Length: 271
Image 1 (cartoon, one colour):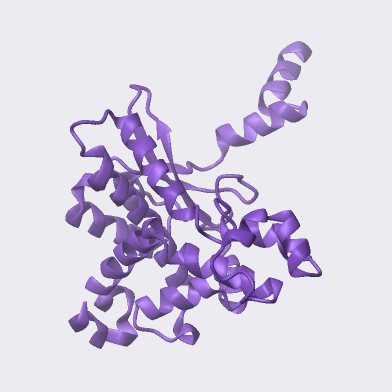
Image 2: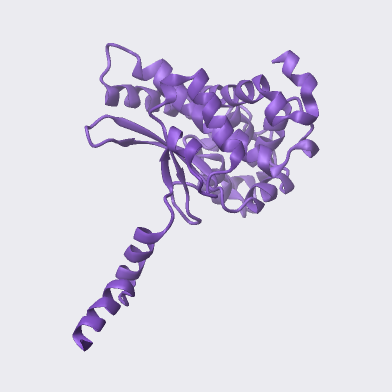
């Protein structure tokens, strides 16, 4: 009897750290969904506004039906707040997955409070002043933006009959790399670029850390580290891949302004 109880104890309450993690993952709520599953789930991890968005996407963009949605955990390297990735299905085909933090809305409010250029641009694309951006709307824009990247892949690369699916992904990555090559930070994302140079005391110190700055046409014109950080953010946001995703998101939300922007119904007529 004692041995049986001990076995049961170890099965239900594993003590080894790795076993604890595995046990928690096995018994935690489902976090990865197809878009249809996300619409139908009763899990509080998928907000109602995102369910509504996915229902619209499946109706208007059935080519995105193979996309999956994962509620990211805090600290997940693939997702600070929102991102996408192209993984591999069991049959060897590409699997687009969106990663989004839906559990901590305050993270989106902090982005707004920081006055980030990206948030200001997103608000303007919706016909709003940045002060009218809410954390819920920013979260919706971000997930729509990631859908825009996947739409770009499916429509403009995966559909190419001369490329196999992974060649199509390589082609998209090559185009993205080319579009970032002439940014102040070269191929660095705005966050990585800012992390590299933010505490630099002089422009020369920033250049030592990111030599690509010296090759930018505006070198010698911008004389503050913060100015270079802002320029990297601006040029990244207006690069072709990011513009495509932003425009997809804005059009999607504006077409349904009566649902997502009830306070600005007049915007729907301009979409």
